[in-house]
Image 1: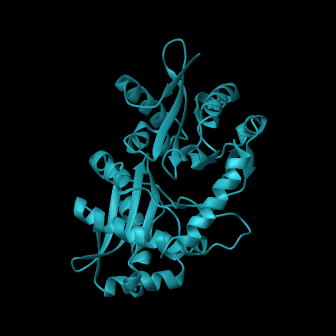
Image 2: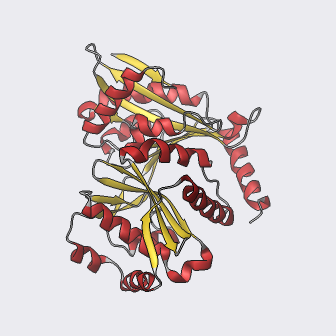
Length: 340
């Protein structure tokens, strides 16, 4: 068994076999592909890293890819760093032995560079719970909502809450136009909408360059679509989506609060689902719905579009407990002092 660490794209041959393995794996998601890895490869605040397993015939048998995020620059980089893994490890035949190897190697690498690591599972990984626990990862319940858009449109419409149905119709009467974002100028405008929202709720948002990379690299391959709701020529709402193996992933979304009464946030998800349905997609993934038993307005909003509530949970490990407490306190201070 050969273990290969990937931190850049110096090996183009690896790219193809890596992508082929994820594409053919039943649980493969875009977040474990080299395409997603590539979005962060030129960023100062990010360091993508992947561990690949290969057998004696050089065939890939396991993939585990994550993004290390740095909230501040050197010399305090390591004090605020975290590694986020979306989608979870992919192993041939869900082999527990392979999971043990790849997770241990990945953990050794990121534990030296980050304060904590979080796995945001997008599929059932219960077969590996004991292995994660053996490496001191804790499991935490976390919800998501999946909408089966292979159903007939009439059935999907019935699942939408009556208030949302009214708002979707109202948005059409307000002459909102729904269409893909096709220019970098409109992408920059949509990004400013997101920044305004994230500033208001005091959460960080990725740099524009990450989304520009997705626009430049993934849109031509139909792996990403950026959506806009327009009022005449003004972009008033947006949703960024990834598309992979029949699934649409809601990545980021928001709207201009001055136009909320025109309901762009109701129109866009429904239209994205209908676009997906009409283009052979089968599932719309809302990308998270909070913790069970904890009130969460975003979950309430998403549930009004129908779908199934699932709980694949998260695994988390704090590598540096003292720095973790400092990072938490620093983030709370940042939220307090950051202007709206």
